[in-house]
Each structure stands twice: as structure tokens, then as C-alpha cells.
Length: 272
Image 1 (cartoon, rainbow, N blue to C red):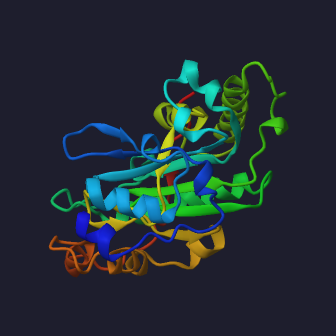
Image 2: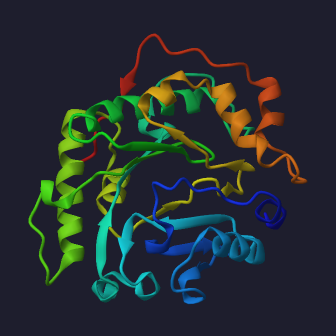
């Protein structure tokens, strides 16, 4: 992990304002470490140096933008950090859908599972596009994708409470998640709760998923994801980790041909 962050500097797209983000890393001992206690405002250079120093399993940032990111802590105290705006993020994983296939449990990545996640992500993004247009899809580095709705606005779903802005963000996300769950598939209870949580954190684009050795690469919008094959996705995510002395997904794909799209899909209905 340390070699990756030393040799491959992060290039997070400018659509994310990193200096307004709260950062945490998951260490090898299973503990979370708050990076903003070392720097009030963290930029790309700071993020790379801190990631190389601590060699984390995962690098995360907040979905909300904060006036004082260094003050972010427990939810009941978070208003001290003054939440500003923030994207809505929908997690899409293969275990949200029921599509029979030959799943290879001996490998960290099943290409057919990833294809199923891709199809479900496109399905959910089509529903999101009825309300919003700025969507950035990021590969999670393992089983699925994160759909970032960058132009999400809480005032589209509730009023802004100056005394409790965190609650306003939470109510807006809950209402939007409920609407999406009623119009498209893939929202089980766990993912519904996660999408509604304004205090959640999500993988930083181009950070490394230690479980697979793959980078969490940004893909673009729904049409960009539609054009991307699973083989190309995994190869692109592996390019950044060639110098690591670990087995990457490129090795795993040697016995995994490009999957075919299922002829019949049974989506798992929302769990709320």
C-alpha cells in the first residue's frame, strides 16, 4: 500500500473540492484514523503524503463539504463543523441482485458479479437522471460502483434548518432514497440506510482497495459506464498497481473471460 501512494500520486478529479472534505483512513489494525487532525484543509499533496505514511487499507472522504472539516466527529456534535453542500452517493453491489450464474468463490473478483453490478448501476442512474444531471460513477475496487450525484440539493426535498443543518441533510437524503427505492430496484435495507446517512464516508477516487489491489477509478456518467467492458475496467484499475508486489486482478482475469449479459434479470426490490 505504501509503495502505491509513493509511486502513483492521487489525481482526484476537480469535481470534488478536497479542501472541504473530511478524510479518514482504515489502518491494518482495523482502526480508523482521522486525517484532518494533522491538517485542517487537506489537498492532494497532503493526502498522498499521509496515505504513504500510514499505508491504509482504504482511504475515505465525506459525502458532505464542511466549513471546518477538522471539527467533524460524532453526529450529535457535527453541526460545529458547519455542513455546507454535498453529493448524494448510491452504493451498488452485486449482492443486491438475484441473477443466477457460476460464481467463483475462490477469487476476490467475479467478473459476472461485476457485470451485474454494472447493469444495476445503469438502471439506478437512469432513475437519478430524471432529477439530476451531474453524475460521476466510481468503481469501488471490488464488487460494484459508487454513483455520486454531484448536483444534489437538499432544498429539492426539504427546508434548510439553520439550527440543525445535519438533520436537514439527513431528511433530504431519506426522502430521495425513498423515492428512488420506489422507482427502481437495488435498494436493500442496508444500502437504503447508507444512502440516507449524511455522515457517511466513501472511497476516495484513485485510492487503492487493499482487498483486490485495484484502484477506485472514476468512470464518468452512465453512458461512459455503458461503453466500458468489464475486462477493460479491471485492466484500467490494475494499471496503477503494476509496481506492487501483490497479485492484482489482471492475474485473476486470466481464467475469467468477458462475461455475457444475462437474458433475464430479476432485480432485488428495495428493502424499505
